[in-house]
Length: 186
Image (cartoon, rainbow, N blue to C red):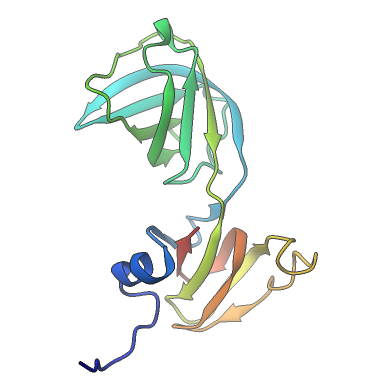
């Protein structure tokens, strides 16, 4: 049976998953960037059960969470009595309150009111597809992995794209100065 229409590789998540292996997308704008840097040595202040299998981990006020991304993984170690040690998927990050919320599939979460333990973030690998959602989308940083573009990390910086434009590559940092786009994560 013949099919009609086209698939533009950005509007149908099941298409990504079934044909290209993409399972997660992020929408980026001037307030939400993509980074792939590890964040290590975060100091745990407290851990709370937020319900529905979600654990809220508060970190020291001096810790910088600005490069911690949704879908990355938070590794907790040396928590009180080692009760919350493990690796957890990041659901959300608030750099103002210094709280990272993570999925916790365990039967229970042990609340920790006292300071103790360390958190490290295993970063996302990057994105290999971007689709522009607004006209005049510009980048203050659009970095491709050097192994894939012959060492010219700045090849696409300064680029201005229009709505529905797209790029394939291996993007390891995307910071927008204007506009919005959707990325498909590796």
